[in-house]
Amino acid sequence: MDYRRFETNLSQSYDRGADQYRRDDEIEARSENHQRLGGNLRRMCRSFGRPVRVLEMGCGTGRYFHWLDNTELLVGTDISAEMLNRAKQPVHASQVTAREVRLIRSNLYEMKFEPQSFDFIYSLGVFGYGAAITSELCAKIHSWLAPGGRLYFDALERRDSGRVYEMKQSMKSAVLPFLPGSVRQRVEARRQEAVPVCNHTRAEIEQLMTGSGFDDFVISSNTCHSPLWTGMHLECCARKMAQNKNSGSTHANADLRRSVPASV
Ligand SMILES: C[S@@+](CC[C@H](N)C(=O)[O-])C[C@H]1O[C@@H](n2cnc3c(N)ncnc32)[C@H](O)[C@@H]1O
Image (cartoon, rainbow, N blue to C red; front, side):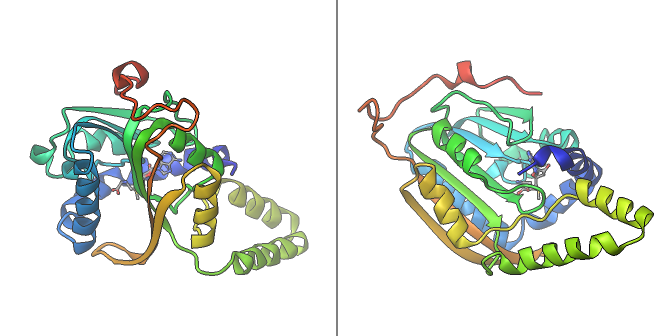
């Protein structure tokens, strides 16, 4: 995926919407959908039975920070500086218990962490508008997780095999050469920078997960009816093998403080 092409448009559109998004947090945090997702996050944090190091990819305004429990370090990353600014005072800030929160501005396809930096990695509401799950990203996530670490993310669901979408795209491309020159140039320029909708089928996510070394995962399909959005999401919950195949060692407790950069 050529994410660089529309990176500026993507971050600017979230920068512009940051104030509204933060106001919406107050509404969304009361929704059934939010309670369900937040409850899942809390259970996953607690399942370790010890303090954990957590990475949220595309944390936005920090809508889910207050659900994390048992968290010694929370690293929140996002492409939008304005969303991250709002995450400094997230919804239910007084209930955020993470001992340390680091906010890092980064495109998720360019994030770099040492192997085994995190026990738990999650991402909600990110894979859909301008962000897709790719095999490279899945492989990086797998390496950033400590043995026994957990991954939880959702993604906009597509039920067809992709052929309908491809057909629509090729029909649009077929029409393009017949448009007058100046119109064609404008359409092409807009297409170049437009932020794409990236949705996935269950089969695609299964393939990506298996291909990146996750053999223990569950994918479910959920229709979300939040006050602000209605749509279908796939949710994936995965665990990295507790035993490191290569070294034969069990759970590693690498010192994350050395491997994760400070906040923006
Ligand atoms: C719909 S918001 C979700 C925010 C938060 N996870 C939540 O559930 O409220 C999507 C967030 O993903 C971020 N995002 C989208 N694409 C990204 C990318 N390629 N790299 C980093 N962040 C990205 C956006 O800036 C935005 O803050």
